[in-house]
Image (cartoon, rainbow, N blue to C red; front, side, top):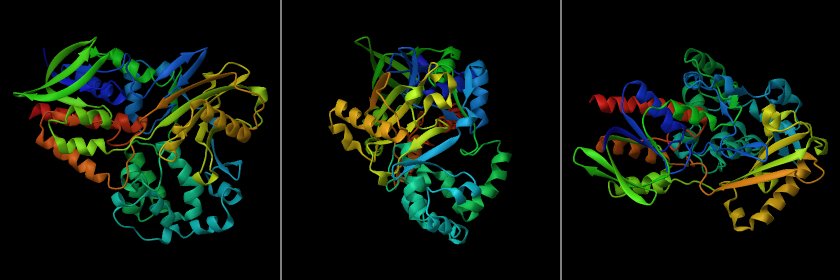
Length: 458
């Protein structure tokens, strides 16, 4: 069976790319190893609760998101975060402090010392730094904003976004927009002010001001809605073994229901994780294998908890809280799921999602799972001033969770471009290229679609 384009992986990047290509009249087949589409977006209904084990929400940073939602008929299922719960908390000295979002709240907050606040005034006068691809986010922030701001703002923020370590992540690869503020405008504060005009022209929102969204039935509703619009085949429960060159085409070998099968394609777009993609092209390009294989994905446990509202001592007036490494806690932070989206828990109960492990403390998974959860519960309940035990609890461990854009990641990115040039007909996509957020994946699908068009027209 010959198909023009085959997309490997039915996550949001792969499905959105397939949708765009189909709209242009191309024949597209999607192959997925799981029984359902969605990739990391996994929404489960259990005991009357809706649990997102992957992304709990997205930020509407690009108009491409709303356009795709409308075209898939999902607008009436889309929900936005409760504006009353907009606070982000940081744990310091065992207490939760709201992260200041305005100059006035910065002056009043006890999250930062007077010395740290004064240090921020020097930021506009600090010059540009060296090459950001080989500079960690820690080095960048400490130089521009000071050690305390790194410890109690950026360190927990990095743990919340990447489950990562700011000492390892490349500022330019992992946070390109932040580095660009210095690179283009000469500083962070200058860039925030001047960059707002540029975003307005591009019809894009900063992550600070973009609206947070989800769907009534969870984030997996998004890829499922896109998949439902596709006319071509979506082959699920298919374990892809290898991709090899076959004349002017490529041959995909996969196993479905215990039987080995083959699919031929002129163009292949892999949106699988780097640790899966590397083995598919090992024979085709051993150098690519080495680049993909060395991309680190730390383990993360997602722990979902439900408590009676009357037992919770801390007001649920925010998004949740993050924990700096200096606080030496067992988990990275918690999302107050039912405070953000009101349909997430029945009347009289509140739901929370806790994240454990990551690049900061992968060794935690050497513990017995029951012991680890018990320790996390004790710490979480202390912070939130909760009496009693959870009414409901569920968990999932992602052994390889989020790709880390570590220092020197540019070497991987350069080789991915070289590989695509020297192996015409193969495109590499997914969240190890172009960013890990939902909005990044949608923008990445648009870029991949355009590269595919260019290939097809040559």
